[in-house]
Length: 498
Ligand SMILES: C[S@@+](CC[C@H](N)C(=O)[O-])C[C@H]1O[C@@H](n2cnc3c(N)ncnc32)[C@H](O)[C@@H]1O
Image 1 (cartoon, rainbow, N blue to C red):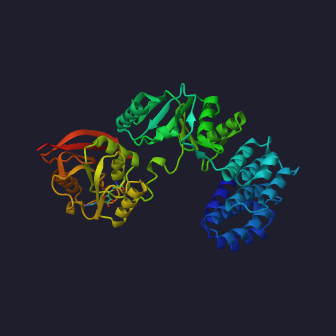
Image 2: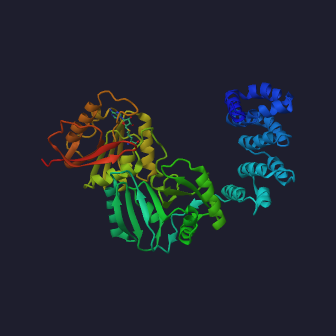
Image 3: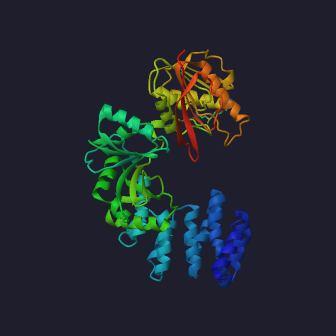
């Protein structure tokens, strides 16, 4: 076994011990050992950093801190390096930064050790580090700058500012595959009302737009059916050059309040840590005001093949901020918005969601206007409370709404031929098994056929092939939609006129 393998094996053993066992037995044994034995047991330093950061109380971390700090000056370089990596794990305290900087300035500190010191300072350094490393350690400088900017000047995305120069810009509205034509229909309607964009193409899960006039993010977030927005920054191998180009900078500067910070994600390619590090460093050299930051960054740079996109990260999504309360199987809000739009309006709409959960479909339908009454049923009292609260938070409390905790088959407030729309995302039985799921979907069709007025609609994702469709219901459309990892048909029925 090589020395590296032995260290790894020892680490795996020590990693399983408690803080008490590490401190009372292992650390004491390490302290009493010879220099050679200590070097062989260096894995203990790493284990202490990890175990105390994950399980240690504040008092336990303070107990171990002086030990780790003392090891920063150990005669053995390997032990010093391990201590440098372990110290930031238990969180920075007064004096830690100074200790690390003192080592950085020491003449005897070699380049390899300085690299490790730089990595530790990236995690806990502040203004003092910035003064020391500026122009010397670009990576540490950019990370510390980002951390200071994050804490002193938190950034937000501005929805109200207009981007003036729009020529050549492409905007990708992404959503669930199968819903692109609904997203497009909403865009077409918005263009008719306000202009500002034109549709370039529609592909599976993607609508490509080009702005035709100055626009704000608010113009885009007025649309409810897409999932995410990506501004196409460019294509090519040099991601750093693309994200620091004048047109990228205009996007960043127009739409960001505060420091410009971004994360990078190589879509479908895993972490790509080395590539991220390289891009971050080069981009910082090209434009020091654009900072790579893995925490709370307002922008995500998405590398999709050789295309680079910029996605605003706004949480909560302002379109669905009414969702203060959630159930575990809550619907994907853009899917609910698409369902409401696909159903289309009917005068004096009386809407029922038989499986309403937290009420996302009801809210999304009500947001389109023209609703006279809302009805929601669910087996969960808690979910119904959430639905009511969400409706209020969405500013829709003025619409008469009735929620009842019951099996949807037992709901009697809607008489035959009284509702105009049944909209629902029924349980699929994927997480919580549903006894006789076929019977449940069959009953949904029967009950909808009964309560709907002639001309009324039923819309729901149907995972089954049902053979008994009530005679009064006619299938208007059926489209295969990605429901988040599995495909399902989204079906729209209309009740025949009497
Ligand atoms: C997929 S979730 C609906 C989520 C909802 N659209 C939302 O966004 O929160 C399905 C819901 O159906 C409810 N449910 C299951 N069986 C039911 C039944 N027989 N009658 C009424 N509700 C039922 C569950 O409690 C669950 O809240």
